[in-house]
Amino acid sequence: MFEVLNDYGIQALHIKNCLSKEECEKLIEYGKANPTQRRISYSEVAGGRYLESSGEVDIKAEELFDLLDKKTEQAARIYLNKNELDSSLYNFAEEKEKKSFTIKTWKIGGSIGNHKDSYKYSDGTVVEPEISVITYFTDDFIGGDLVLLSADDHINGELVNHNKDLDQIIKPLTGSMVVISSKAVHKVTPVISGIRISTDRAIHLFE
Image 1 (tube, rainbow, N blue to C red):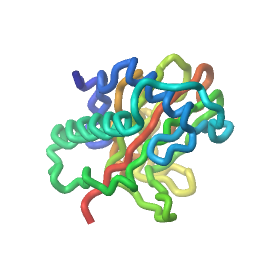
Image 2 (tube, rainbow, N blue to C red):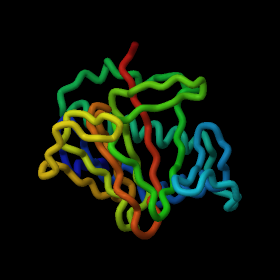
Image 3 (cartoon, helix red, strand yellow):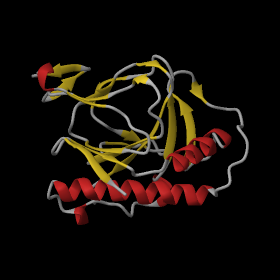
Image 4 (tube, helix red, strand yellow):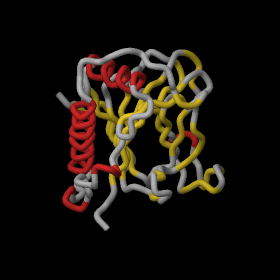
């Protein structure tokens, strides 16, 4: 089922056929119907949290959580194996209360500037993971591309030693996942039309 679409070396790996279209739709609908769920929630990048119910879905929250958890781990392990990284060093068994998925809706204008991934947990702790797994639930939009920036770093958003000609553009594809190194500087271009829906998971090394 899983199939490598594009290999960007240690920076990232784009894998398709990780989720079916039906699974993506159920995850979106569950997020809309249950916006305040702790482990699977729903937010809008441009406009705040979604607060209206969109009806019932025929799958349990725990089943959805386990599905995303399992599939994102599979994608991460494919990336690690391809780059000859020792998967036993990565904490896939992190405490469940620290695992969550926010289903993010990016409306027109939604974007993220130059950055490396970091995450803030409910206790206020900010950490940089070793890798992140981005899951795309839709692709019927224009813009919203993930751009791997050929730069050594960024300082307050300004790129260091940037070579624009070597940037890599990753086009979202429904049901696909991108595993990206936390050390890779990247951005998301503004959504021009349509709605981009995605989620992400942080994976850390054992302490």
